[in-house]
Amino acid sequence: MKSVISNQSSPLNGTIRVPGDKSISHRALMFGAMAVGETRVSGLLEGEDVLCTASAMRALGAKVEREEDGTWTVQGRGVGGFSEPTGVLDMGNSGTAARLLMGILATQPFTTFMTGDASLCSRPMERVMKPLRPIGVNFVSRDKGRMPIAIQGTSNPMPIRYELPVASAQVKSAVLLAGLNAPGKTTVIEPNPSRDHTEKMLTHFGAEVEVVHQDNGARVITLTGQPELVARDVVVPTDPSSAAFPVVAALLVPGSKITVEAVGMNPLRTGLFTTLKEMGAKISEENRRIEAGEEVADLVVEYSQLQGVDVPASRAPSMIDEYPVLAVAASFAKGTTRMNGLEELRVKESDRLAVVAESLAACGVDLEEGDDYLVVNGNGSPAQGGGEIQSRLDHRIAMSFIVFGMASVQPVRIDDASPIDTSFPGFNDLMNGLGAKVQKKGA
Ligand code: S3P
Image 1 (cartoon, helix red, strand yellow):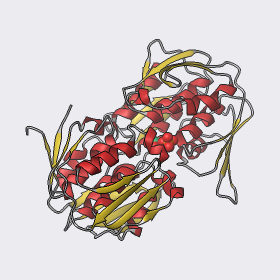
Image 2 (cartoon, rainbow, N blue to C red):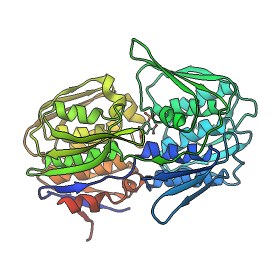
Image 3 (cartoon, rainbow, N blue to C red):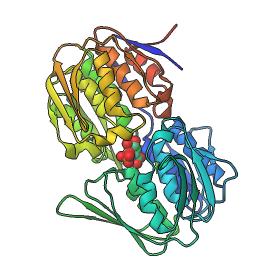
Image 4 (cartoon, rainbow, N blue to C red):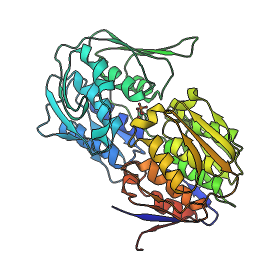
């Protein structure tokens, strides 16, 4: 347990770059491992979640190495070319690693055992197993679809057509990745579009992926199976979900002005920035450009007095990981912020809706928690703080409440900040470099 205290910060000033995008990093290693030749990845997130994916790819027979300059290389095995791992794959805290890999392993003709930490072993996997079973795979799991699980892949996969019952890029990706090794066309219909990194990167590696946008906003994604994936260079943009923390911190700490460089601006990821601007945030985008196929921009962020807003449920997929830090911002805003359509927060690294609500309450914030909504009433002055927060193996809870403590009257204590290493190694040092006062307990 690494306990920290986040004290009221000095004005945050300076220019930073946050680590690589977690979603894109996992996919770069996985797709590189299924391509023929050597894939070179720069800007990879070297967080624990992605390192679990690297170990899993090695256990399946791909060669994955880090060069001295920080570039990662992957010698792929081709689609369907993995070999049966001798040990249990440990996916740590990572739902993305586990669920995408379940899709890949569904169509490899051998048995794989997979486990994770206490958080991952409590998360629902049936949402991935259900669409994959008709492909021909068999799963054996604990407690109605919780990990550890065994995946008995099929040597005779069938392509499927599946309409997503929840907006989930992980479920969509698992089905498409299973379809890679099946003959014919695999189709996923998503009524409310989620992040499209799988579709974009599979195309980059040479797969045929057709995306049709329907008038009702749905997307129909069709993948042609059994392509030869060809090794490609991948430049990973920085993670907008990580940029969210310094951005909100600068908005809340009086006198702050920071620049966050080269932030990934994929429109399916930027719902938080849209919402903050509606709240009156001074965020300007400079130097918007395309880097390696993904949109990026430098964000210049200044302290702002925020106003409460209604956040529509339809925006949830584009900011699904950002509600904890948005709830922190709302606690310092003037007026009421209503966040709707939050049912998916209950099955993240923690039950984020419950944990955010209990943590805000511990910091003196007036709020209402519903089954699938959160209402936060701010009064426009610094929130009280003083809470003792349990991070519950959830990196985004830990970082959100460290940000809270930077702006609140009383410091905020976090019982365990170590989960931050899953997605944002060096977070506290980076923030302290800007002016924050995050202390290790006892230091
Ligand atoms: C991710 C998809 C999202 C997100 C997660 C990363 C991905 O999960 O919360 O952090 O990389 O595909 P869901 O698919 O469960 O919404």
